[in-house]
Length: 127
Image (tube, rainbow, N blue to C red; front, side, top):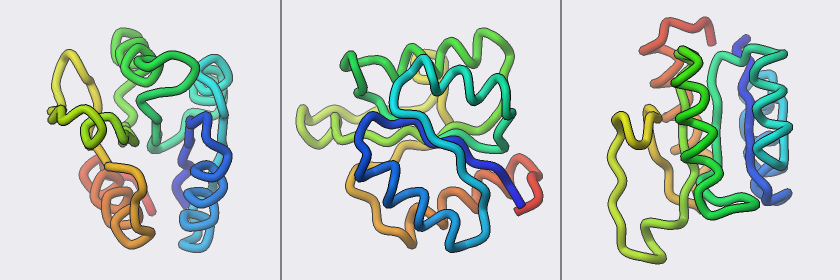
């Protein structure tokens, strides 16, 4: 079963996401800050990363995603955000924001599973 890393400073989001994913049989590791998140990704090599945009700093998630890509980490990344709703921004994937998908918080369990399964299939990871 795939290993998923969740990096978010909100303990409720970490708990809820972990419960949803483990109930579907995924293994989950979590971190509540970018430093620990970087460490678990490098050490445990997850099959997918779920990363919050805003943690200690408003752009921690962007910087961490860019760091992973600069280091040639090709693991798919889903970015959790509530930024676009609150400030009216639309984000796209690409070089500036090198993630595979965005998800608005709060996310429904069904949509989370759908997005995780889609990215794991696209990257040919055994679910």
